[in-house]
Length: 245
Image 1 (spheres, rainbow, N blue to C red):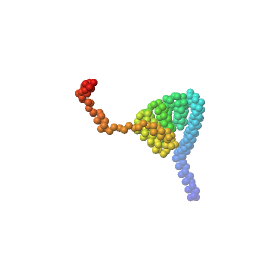
Image 2 (image 1 turned 90 degrees about the horizontal axis):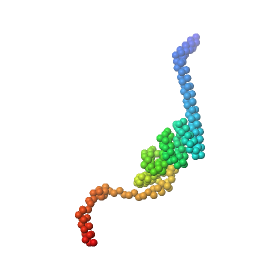
Image 3 (image 1 turned 135 degrees about the vertical axis):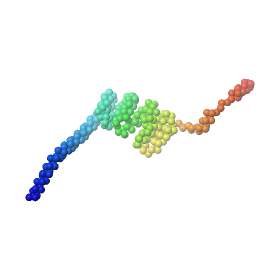
């Protein structure tokens, strides 16, 4: 009899607890189910966006292979507008820059690469874009822009490639000592063999003109403060020359 009452009491307690907290339990289940559904939907939509971006990028590459600039530009704009958050946007910029260079439109290529550098692409794609942009600047005789673009970057595995373009820029600017220093860093870097043509860098370093030694400050002061020869002495020399004649 006591056991029966105990069970009834437990049931009554359960009913009481459920009447008080049951709505919270049901609400938590609904919220959890909705959250799980939302996560699944988000992942599915994200995957679909990746697939759509991949398809658009393949179409872009096909247009570029045909040299179809108009369709390529339209597709690249579509990728940037619809899939700018994906890696395909940065890759599209690199691909368009190559097509522009093939069409002798170097400024359009530079603009495309600069958009990648300033965009949302990953660090590796940005390094590639920055290096290609630096080479276009060198082609455009904009050596100082190369220095401004490349200096101070956290380059990691791209150190040797950056060093080479910096050396080229300093050479163009006539800053031979800095150019020599950059080339030597590349040649001394054990990781450079897989990223740059070391033989070419060696030739560039050997082709540099000799660095002219700087005059000590005392010599410059003496040169600047040297007094001109007195006018009387000059006149006397001229008179003596006339008499001899």
